[in-house]
Figure 1 (cartoon, one colour):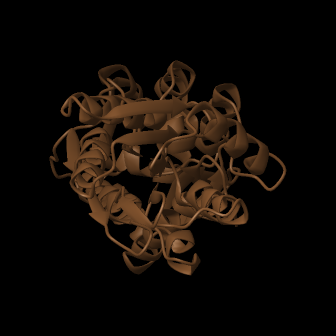
Figure 2 (figure 1 turned 180 degrees about the horizontal axis):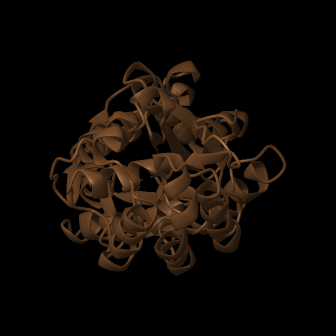
Length: 346
């Protein structure tokens, strides 16, 4: 007897099995929950795929009452969670909170590393689809590329997809986005009120999130005629590269009195390097990180940080995904405000 199959015995004939919801899902190359939505008349399934499923149900004389009894429960459902970099605590704090929430809600979770390039992240989406997940959450703005969008359309078009800090114009994709541009603009205003006039913004690898932070920084500096802002891009927060990159950035803006970093890890490297050079923080230079991660708490002095709401965004995405799987309608896009957490570095 094969798993998940009902066996009918016909005397004088060969054994044959009755199709189940899982067989229909495999034949249509969709998840069991997609078949469930068709059986229960719910939205969220493309017409072509809906027609294919209905035809398979009709061809196999599917028993509607038995089919609804065979609908998969939450504990048999699998949710995919993709993060760009499993080493980055900013993503992992949010992913951990999300997996805990989904586990309590009765779902199984697969967490996968997205990779270093847009092509790798698109391939990871395709790989996740082969696991027949019921839904997916993409964590981080690095997934906001045309390659990933095409991969979602081609491989996950039949299941709800939630994105955190990226968005796509696809019918099955919903987004939760932190307003980082306005948050950075508020950081500039705070530094201005603290007497800082020569500001330096350090950005790590180029990604959509860096673009938002840069635009917020420029908008904030433009509000004050006596403030000058300088931007250094591609400052990578690694032991090998950080010191040299920071040294070059300071050389470009030697008279800066405040530094904003696109991440807390980078801010921690900046703090240590500036202290090694003899600078006093915050006496001579004020320092702000972004992400409000553990790096901002364990540094000495502790680093002020823009809370980009990654944990809150992941939890919100998880709640929206569960509602979608239960057949509810939700908003296409949710915006979260960012707050500056003041600590000793400013």
